[in-house]
Amino acid sequence: MKGKTISQIQLGDRASFQKTITETDVYLYAGITGDLNPAHINESYAKNTFFQGRIVHGILTSGLISAVLGTQLPGPGTIYISQDLKFHAPVRFADTIIAEVEAIEIVVEKNRVKFSTVCRNQNEEVVLSGIATVMPPK
Amino acid sequence: MKGKTISQIQLGDRASFQKTITETDVYLYAGITGDLNPAHINESYAKNTFFQGRIVHGILTSGLISAVLGTQLPGPGTIYISQDLKFHAPVRFADTIIAEVEAIEIVVEKNRVKFSTVCRNQNEEVVLSGIATVMPPK
Amino acid sequence: MKGKTISQIQLGDRASFQKTITETDVYLYAGITGDLNPAHINESYAKNTFFQGRIVHGILTSGLISAVLGTQLPGPGTIYISQDLKFHAPVRFADTIIAEVEAIEIVVEKNRVKFSTVCRNQNEEVVLSGIATVMPPK
Amino acid sequence: MKGKTISQIQLGDRASFQKTITETDVYLYAGITGDLNPAHINESYAKNTFFQGRIVHGILTSGLISAVLGTQLPGPGTIYISQDLKFHAPVRFADTIIAEVEAIEIVVEKNRVKFSTVCRNQNEEVVLSGIATVMPPK
Figure 1 (cartoon, each protein chain N blue to C red):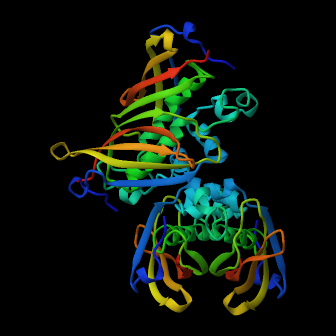
Figure 2 (cartoon, rainbow over the protein chains, first blue to last red; figure 1 turned 90 degrees about the horizontal axis):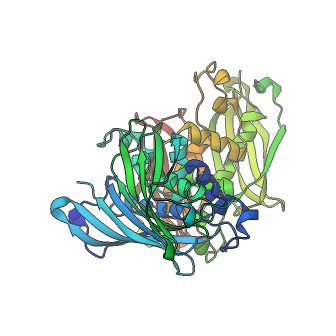
Figure 3 (cartoon, rainbow over the protein chains, first blue to last red; figure 1 turned 45 degrees about the vertical axis):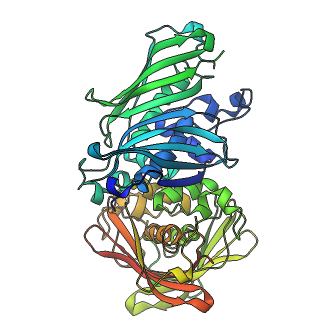
């Protein structure tokens, strides 16, 4: 139960996780975070917005990136330093999202690795992108 | 149920939300995101780590920032463009976190506002900081 | 709040419980158990499998058997000794499952009762069968 | 996202998953399955029982076995044929349970593998044991 150390990670290494995001996920997430924005939990409101229906919290989706970094690459023992996120497109209820990370910079002396982080939906559309910086386990 | 438009926002405007983060929150979040990192759900493992016990997913905490932006300032109708996050310190089960946002840049012609975003625990320790860029409702 | 003692149970005694299993049940169960098998939480993956869509965790369904044994027959105070399970057919989201137990062997001197345990869906199809051995309350 | 085929599995192959089981897990599981046995959700009742407090549903713990079989060994695409379970000792709230499976019989012509399945708590005590029969993905 220990992730990869920095010497075990190569530029270009990749890992991913995917999941269908449901109404259940969104409703529980609303309770956990207090983000009761009507765009997420009020269909009467949301159907009259630009997106024409309730959408998933953008920042919920970023949790799938953390799932990959913390359980696969580098995996357990990783310390999360920073994450930049750009929200490109809405995630709708029942969309299947794949979060993929790829090692793009390795700084051995600081024990830091940068990963590009991208989330796509079932139509290969990028919904979220960014850069994560982490410290792999020693 | 409409948030503030850009003309109703001033530099220095602030809003916040706070919540005690529980074991329940963390366990539900693990299921929502698939983030089963043992640092969050395995006390036998976690007590032997640097943090000496299970900690909250760092990116769970960022949801409280989204809660402020989407429900208070600017509020409903806001479109989230980007969020940068720096993780400074762990959040432990039962910590009470306050997320605060402050308008630091207003670009009227692009309808964009930048907010500094900070999360602190009950001891005033910064656990998370960053910058959000949003489009307020028109 | 005490179940039936062994002297109050006859061969052929039956009890049952039924419930519609929802997407919510499956998603929460995935988090509780860590069973993120894509057959259960990834529709893009699951629609291309033999079952042509997400299915319920087989072992989730077995919980309805435990519900009957622990709350009705024998009821509170029962100690669960063993359970054999055969998975016959998938349970799909929104299926209504009835779990039924029937006393098939009573060993008074050991205070042990065996029950046949069967779960059927709304079309009377057997999805799960097996044998439970329990100690009724004294 | 495909598990190991039968030709990729050797006798003695092992995999495991571990998790701290919480009150949250037990309460959600009670709702999912309808197993409202007071031994699990009624402390006033449970403190006067042999176990002197609420305990985890025995059959909840078996879900960790399914998690290993369905996500690791053999992994995605596995069809669960049967599972025998023996309940040896109670699981208490906040116990950390490790579920481990080990390939003990491989029948290539039928595409069936038997695994011994054991769950232990943080004190190395066996709480659940049994045998799983599965069909690995082809």
